[in-house]
Image (cartoon, rainbow, N blue to C red; front, top):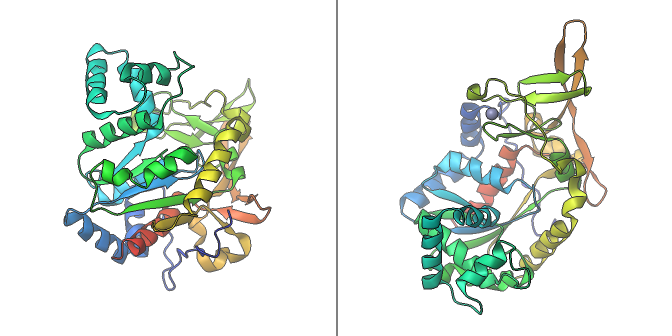
Length: 359
Ligand SMILES: [Zn+2]
């Protein structure tokens, strides 16, 4: 992404602080954020306490980590202050609602009151469920569904993930806050820049717990216990959640094919970011997942960089050894980069939030 000049790399490093934080530990993570962005967090907390909110249109490629970053913000500020709305989830919920008569009735009632457009709410649902492939799902319909989700949440800062989803919806997003009655609240366009190689590795090595559905990654985010399947000659992660009894995690079907299966979507996401960042009069935030190798020492601490995990099987003692090495990839321009763990990306996000809100 060619936005380097307008948005220089934000340093997460603070001179004089040498403590290494374990970013996978909740308490250490809290301490980490209070060390790195204490002043900014205090300002934002005060902002929320005064009853003020904002809406962030969160742009970035699929698997860029939008959900993860928002979850970390919720961890810092509280779920009552920050909400994450994923349009993909909203659409999936409609599929579920259709199986329940009461839910279905409520949804149609809402749409009859709140949706205006060229097709009926019933036709919209048919199109959404894919039963009527001739009718294209209108943007107005998706907007009514998002509005319903926001009504459910009530007042609070919102990170909207998956809207705008196409170029047409960009113009809708310019007036969206009026539509949902967030008139006095600022709206912000935030984008994540992430190398495609990282997305590809995230997809290809993802493993999910069949019980609690926690996602982990064999290469980039290991669990404490790792197993070895002697028959298949492969390593697997075991869920860390105490309630799951070290259940074997498994790959999601189709993930092994990697990034090429979502190529069209990735290109649209790229176009959306370019389009939004060419707009005037809207506040923008740009966070980067990757930093060039030669600038790493200056900008971040070692523990903020994503390591690559690999494993060795000790046949004699029947144990798996987890080993780490630096994870170095080429970004989309062919430059060698490190990928950052989620917390330092959130540090940059918080700093930029405070700046665009003029706090
Ligand atoms: Zn689990």
